[in-house]
Length: 64
Image 1 (cartoon, rainbow, N blue to C red):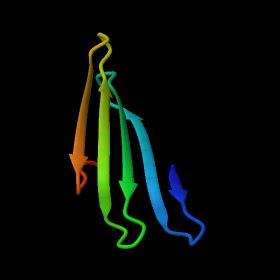
Image 2: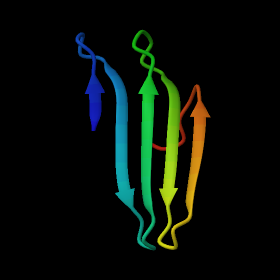
Image 3: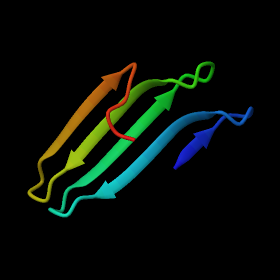
């Protein structure tokens, strides 16, 4: 799901999906409104056994 500002530029994006082994992955990306480049991406992985891992990427992105 993408979030737009009043000028129609993408300012944030949230993606959720599941892997074949049952993991749920959520990525939240925030974009610079002037350049459109990713400023921050937060990736959270929820494993079936209850383990949760989080990765933060600044000034870039790992997942689409």
